[in-house]
Image (cartoon, rainbow, N blue to C red; front, side, top):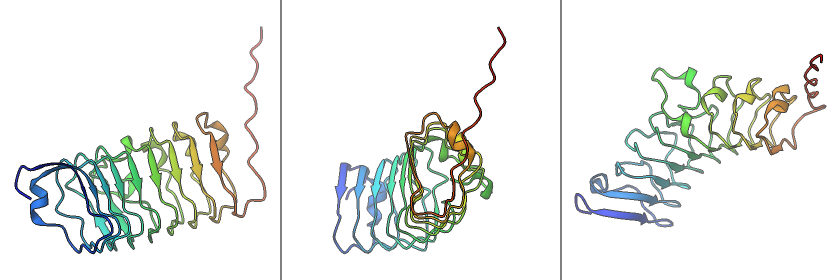
Length: 219
């Protein structure tokens, strides 16, 4: 690589890469396909990169991305991650961190858990966190994801969903199959945009009653 070189994409999947060359941070590259390698770090990165697929590497236990201001899609599934920080990625719209060891939401998806002001959540439309170890979702999550359309939480350890989940005003698909859910929030009935709800293989004994119809106005 030479400084200023312009690449549309770099595809190096299914090799044995252990690191990225220092010169990569000095080129322009929109898409990086790095899945199925042996990467232990995801740096340096081109500042112009918009898509990264680094699934099936060795990026755990903690991955913190701070140098990708244009990043829109990030896939880091199957990396042994115990913690993931994405709160400095203002354009991120799609996140796939499934099949890791996360016991809490990635930094940036729980604004109350951060010392720094998050800049990530408002652009997200897709979040995939299946096959992790999540045991709760904070109430602070929903209000900060107004554009979220798909949320996959399947195969985790959740016992409850947030009571204010209806603040995910754009959500169309919610997957929470194979958790430990004992009840569902009544707020689900208020989600006008929701088209698919998957909650099979939990511990539910009933569904929440629908809200009463609005009172009729006297004529």
